[in-house]
Length: 306
Image (cartoon, rainbow, N blue to C red):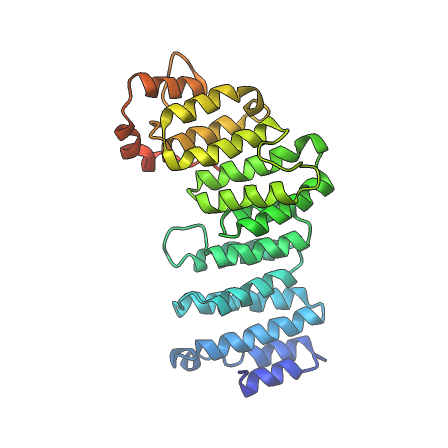
């Protein structure tokens, strides 16, 4: 429920930008006000003021207040809650997509939402950001945030639109293959499976399967099935048999190296006379124990997901 002061802000007609900003910030600048644990009321004022400025095209003032909302969350050490994440996502959605303030805002919001856990931000906030960027048709950034959410279905639907509107027909399989492999690199098997199933069912250029016409889709399907068994020999044969398809993108073998470490006991990359992914797999089969891979997998450097 809005406080009286927030209601005044919401119904204020900003004849003077400076006067309204001063009205909103008056209690925020009062140290006694903030020390009396009234951060929530102050945030409500600032959020209402930011929304009002956005509605009147006052981007700079709105962005300033949005950053103050974040500052309040940080200083008060507020616990993450869905309502707060939705408020932050709303402010993000109203910012000029090309403004540097938006970049600073989202970086700081994600850091706060991680709660000091070292994660890359709360999955729910990533999902909300992904949906906003999808509406703006900023598919690349939307995909990044979907990868760090738990919304495999939303990611798949976005990728279908991305592929049909911006991609080549010959690349329909590559859109989902990249997403599945990246989800697996993040140890998110459930989202990897959902994004694959949803995408292949909904994409107009993919015939009913499995099996599929596209070999790369068959590889991904077999890979997802092989995860539960965790047998290195199965993984090795799969990678060997589908090398022609995997060579279409040089990053695939990088992702598969990491997936091998996480799910199949492959040791981290090492110099091998065989070279490459297959060399690493063959070395594992001929000499490295699966236990060694399990012990060291968490120490390997994660692959950068762009």
